[in-house]
Image 1 (cartoon, rainbow, N blue to C red):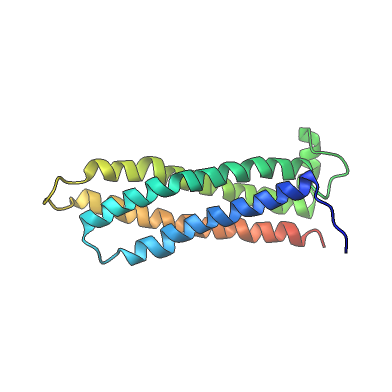
Image 2 (image 1 turned 180 degrees about the horizontal axis):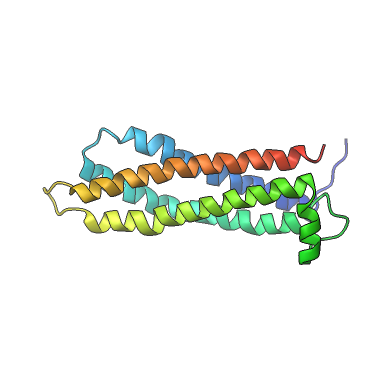
Length: 176
């Protein structure tokens, strides 16, 4: 069966690659980091949480940028519209299709994960870093609360990410 590599093929491949990397970073934060270090002394756990976030941020945000750029391309040059989606009217026409409806809901979930990731990376973790005690001191109750919020945000973000993947499957299924 012959195939050809087109710009759309490359865009879909890059989109899938970005989704795998992004979902993997969510899995690491929610299912590996939080449970694995739950028994570790809280001050050390807080330091490791900050370090993990610092190391994952370029990967997570880089994959999100890749997803947004390829997602825009894939929306403009989608397999349902007869012409590229380059106007609000064509976008609205796309949204009225099963493909476009699933895509629209997927985009709502994507906005949710971007907001959760931003809150986690740019609000909660920096707040926790500022609360870290000097050597030998214990973590304050307020810092414990932030550490719990970080775990909660990671778990909820993973659930939202699973929602994105579900609606991505709906987008593909609508093409049958």
